[in-house]
Every structure is written in structure tokens, then in C-alpha cells.
Image 1 (cartoon, one colour):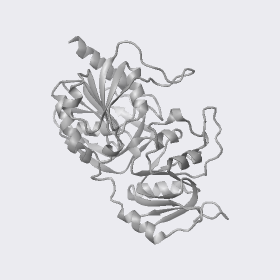
Image 2 (cartoon, rainbow, N blue to C red):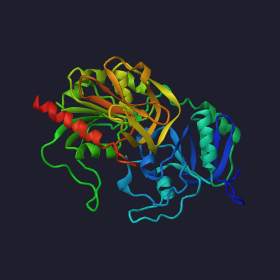
Image 3 (cartoon, one colour):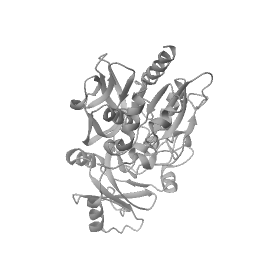
Image 4 (tube, rainbow, N blue to C red):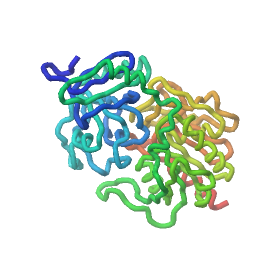
Length: 386
């Protein structure tokens, strides 16, 4: 079912249930096998593709105008795309934006990632919602030759993300310092100056803009790999510890991350977690996580703050969630999704330890939740005065 009449398909997407979509390939030539998800954001395709939380996933963009603002180095959330591939309705058009330094298709080709256009993304999104995030095989072949039987077999053979520790694959290889602040007009990115709060950020797949938000809130950030121990974290004498976003099954990453977090909690330090970091904190406190049907991926998700009644529009990217029914005594559910009631935030009742499932760094997305970085910084300042 080619999306455009009289044009030979050069890309193919095969789902594990045998459903096949044909389209137009762009970017790299090749094949990938992954989980398929959809993202409803209207902007930020470059940030989404370079978000380490998308490791092991092909992203379907429901917004049709993907590629029209090109690409530039400033919008990368890590050095290379991490998502396995991208699917769009319309083939990318020529870039038309003053910040563009390149074209999306050329960027994907250079980075080794497959793109596929000419797809009925509404139909594909409905399939994802109905059957859960499917396993898929996706191929770009300019000759238009596809072995459908082999592709379906590869999709069925994909092990999936349950039980998979991907944080170890996307984390930094060694520690480093971060002082770059958020982008602003007309200066661009800045540098933190003056006395700062010492923060250790544990990198489960950290986005650069999260680190920039910490720096903008007055933090001197030292980033450690996901496998860092509590002893290594505490040896830096931090004022607070940050747990980053990341991909994969939190229970799998928790095998080594949970003992580290539990060791940090014994020191009564402020702790702030986002996304996978939120799930890691919940596991360390005694809760459990579960795989979602199709997850939350977008920049328009309403979240209610249970303590203030305020509703925030947030960015989200996760396929697992904290089971709020398993939260132990002394751990409060602070935020919930207004889409499905799933857990979106927790905090300890007796100390400044908190986390959220969504992305307050807003890259891409709304900035309703930036106050969480300031809350973390204030908790560290108060601890310094004790």
C-alpha cells in the first residue's frame, strides 16, 4: 500500500503480527529491528531523535511537517541520534529556518539512522494504541526489494524492552563537569558563574538540556556513569544528587542503580529524579514498575499536581510507569496523568527527595515545570544552612 501513487516504495515496515507498510526511504540505507512508538509533539524532532530515552525504539511522528526546520548542532540532546529510526507522513521538505545548518535526511544518513515517509501515520498510531507498542523490522532499500517473510520473522524475534538494561549502553564512559546554561535570545547558551551548589548527576541517558537547567538553577554539575556506586557519588561531597532520564526496563537497570540510590538516601541528601530516574527512585523506596501498553510520548500531556491542584502541560517519553498501588508508607504520589491516571510524581514525606515521570527541561515542549529545578536548588541551599 504505497502512500503516494505511481512512486515505487523504497522503504518497508513489517510488524510482528504480519502487517506491512510501504513508503519512501530517506536517511541511511539499511535495516533496523526495534519497538515502535508514536510521538505527538509538533516540534522538536531533532531533540526527540537524540534523546537517549528512545534507545531501542522507532518513533512514529503524528505531526506531518517533520524536517521542515532542518537540523543544527545546538538542538542535539546527545552527540548522535539514539532512536533506531523515524516514520513520518510526508517526506521531509527543504529546510526553512534561520537556525538550520543542514537537512534532516542528510543528517540521518550521516548518522546512520533510517527514515521512512509516505506512511498513513494515523492508521499506524491506531495500531500501536490497539495492540500495544509492537515489535517491528524497518528497512530502507533504494532498489525497492524486500523479503517480507524475513522481515516479519525478525520483528517476531525481537526480544523487546522488558528486562533490557539499555542505560548501560547510553551512559557516559567517564565522569565530566557541566556548567553550560540554557539557551536564550540573542546570546545562545551561557556559562554558570559564581558560587554554586555541588550536584552529582547520575547519567542513565541524560539529555543535555536537563544538565543546562541544573546549571541555570545555580548548580555545578558533575556527571557520573549509570554504574557509579554510592561511595563514588558521596566521595564528591555533593549538596544534592540528580537521577537522569534514560531508556529500557527500570527493573533491569535497578539491579545496580537501586543499591546506589539506597546508599545515597542514607546520607539524607536532597535527591531529584526525572523519567527513568523517577522510576529508579521509586524502586529504591520499595515500589514497583510495570510496562505500559503504548507509553506516553509527546509534548502536550496534562499532569495534575495533587498537592496544589495545578495542572501542568508537560513533555513525556516513557514506556514503563511506577505502580502507585505499591508506593510504601511515607512516599506520597504528588502528580498524576490526566490522560490515564498513571503515576507522574512522588516525594518522601519527611525529606527533600522527589521525582517526576515527565520532562521539566522542556526540550522540546512547554516550560510549565521548570520550577522543579528551582525547588531542588532551594532544598540544597536550605540543607547548607542547617
